[in-house]
Length: 335
Image 1 (cartoon, one colour):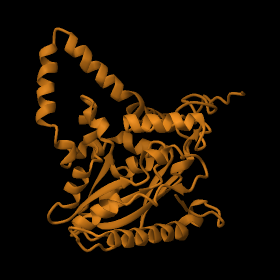
Image 2 (tube, rainbow, N blue to C red):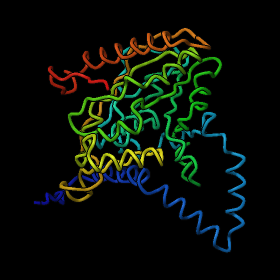
Image 3 (tube, rainbow, N blue to C red):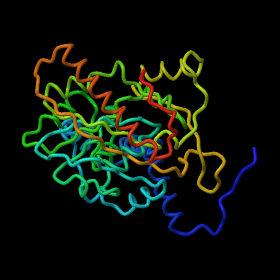
Image 4 (tube, one colour):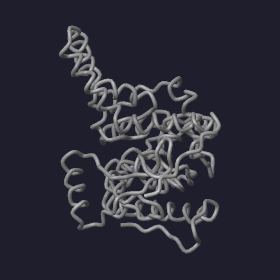
């Protein structure tokens, strides 16, 4: 394989953008392991009392990831996130104003490999979320597994990441006075195994839990489509039924975390590595679907709202695809 190296005269600004993305990828792939290792070493050191005190703090703080987390406007506004935004670049597009007197559930599509658009738009202020949607506070839901890692959990909560367990989403959508948004990557971990350039297949037909939650709490539904999310990485071929896919599916059932084998570019060369490609991400927030609170929704209630949501998502995609480089003959496929 011929390796294409990055030129030496790249502007400092672009180097800083790459550094910001290296930090982000490292956070998801290695920082959790480093935090766990640091905690174990602390337990085995002469400073074990600090580890014991932190363990006590973890016990007392165990419910925080499911009760809105502990966000930090300072962390969300770090300069590094603006470099992260400009690397792709990432943009957030509003189609209509959202009334802050309601709570909302944003259905984010597609999941992608590392949910770059979801993180950049809803866990940082780099794309101007607070300016576009005044009075609204977003929370991006993440697998509970990550909130069990010492130190790492505290870092990710600063950006507005919270646990994806049902109680966590319910807490956000039932907050009095409105103004809160639960952002859910509806396709979940299984959809990340399908994330590759050109892929428009969404795990939707059996995904109705978020619909039931919205009905129980009266949270308005908003479809969100992130154009370019699947263009950031290539994946090893893993068709359904292949040995690799069977192993990935089994690990996902055991661990609750999908393990896509992805690759793209490196830091100083463009031929291979774990950094995403520099491809634009346009995250379009659609029109809200009003939801009447139904504490005990029937199957018919859920199915009806689910169909309405898929219709809204399809319309959002079809109305915007030409603007963001999707061919006219390409359409969403629901499985």
